[in-house]
Length: 164
Image 1 (cartoon, rainbow, N blue to C red):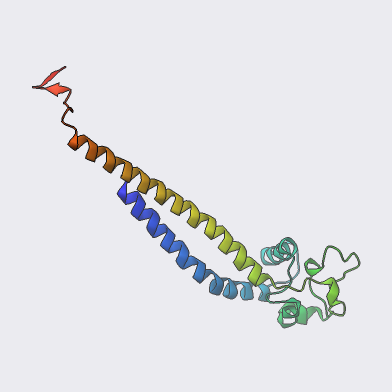
Image 2 (image 1 turned 90 degrees about the vertical axis):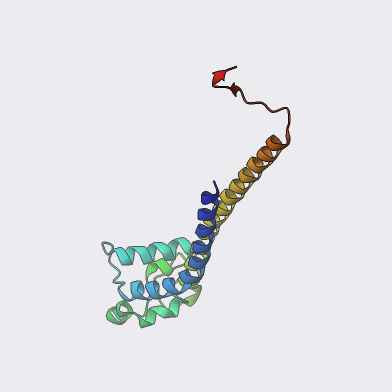
C-alpha cells in the first residue's frame, strides 16, 4: 500500500514537471506544423490546424498575422488566411487580411497550452486523490494494529495447533 502512495506521489511530480515543459514543447511543435501547412484536406497537419482553429476559435500561433510568415501564405499570394480563421458570426468571411474583424484575433498556442494544462491538472488531482485514499488506508491499518496490541482480551482462534 505504501508503494502505491509513493508511486502516485512520483506521478504527481512528473505531471507538475510536464506542465512547465508543455509550453516550450507546444511552441516548438506548433511552429513546425504551421510551416508545413498546405491547405489541402488530405494533409494531416493542415486538417489538424484547421480543426484546432475552428474548435478553439483562434487563428495563427500568436494572432492571425502569423500566417504572413508561412510558406502557404507566400505561395498562394492572395493575402488571406485559412477559412478556419473566420469567425462563425462572419458569414461573408473569405479569410482576407483586409477584413481583420472577420477573423479570430487570439492565437492558438496559448489556448492549446491552456487546454493541455487543464487536462494535466485533472490527472494531477486524480493522482492526489488516489494518494490521499492510500494515506487514509494506511492510517486506518495503523489504528487497527495499535488497538489490537493494547487489547488484553484478544485471543487467537488457533491454540495448540487445533481449531477452536
